[in-house]
Length: 405
Image 1 (tube, rainbow, N blue to C red):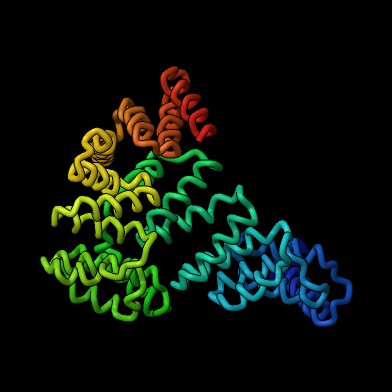
Image 2 (spheres, helix red, strand yellow; image 1 turned 30 degrees about the vertical axis):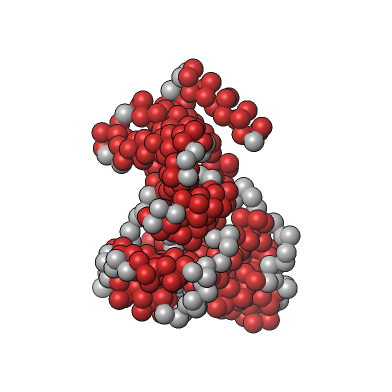
């Protein structure tokens, strides 16, 4: 019989010893976890964070449970608990923990952002918007709330809010070419959401009271020529809803039913620029320059950078016999059209490679008094060529002009 050398025996002995040690350590950890004896809260928290970062989510969850027995949850504890809950798809638990982070705490802005992202994922856009706006207010330098709101407002076709978020983002982070392009594009160009019909419908299934998603879906159906579906989506909104009324008027005009369009506008509320532009449009079609001028002036006062409003005001002034006053507005409308042509070029692969186009877009935005967009384009030009003297001068000029206005 072969006698084992002591080194051969150690090959069998050490794995056994290590296994016993591991079992003993685990048992000791579990025992201490039950009693809380001998455990340091900060050590447990660091272990939980390390487990989470290394995607050992079950271990992180267990460590968090232990931590809860050792101390009243701190904001950092609540944040980590919420992140683990998000991974485990326990959204209600995550929101409950995040909501416990005190106001003015350094973690609050991040907590509000996470709640907004959870609600966005759950297709509850009203709650998402509320929390994302609150996150941006709590920490004005936080970038992600603006990016999430850009997506949300883009889906809901909300031009003014969308532009506002691009502007806010441009103040805290350099915009990319795509950022500047989409900002300009969505300021005056209709964009359809053909591929997003299902997404918008999903928002309404979760939250039938989501007015903005309802309006966006109805307008999308209208643009696709699916007018009956647009009317069905609009049905829950009252006749007094100004934006719903705008879409209903356009549906009537799409059907060449001017009588219905006129009746829908007969008792239109004041200070609604989209409705004023529609009233002015129909008045011009009838040759009623006085009425058209009144409503286009009101619309222009409320939204001075709307291209259709500028053109309509110029045309109304011509019809009422004031060609001299009309000239600047008609010229400005041409400038808007020139900007739109440049934006169309910017969408092409060739346009993206055209260094001069970036400065041309900056100049075109400046010409129509869209100064924040002009700054974005000129900043991109300087990123491409830091020594571009023309772009540097333009930036200085626009900043001075913006301060005066």
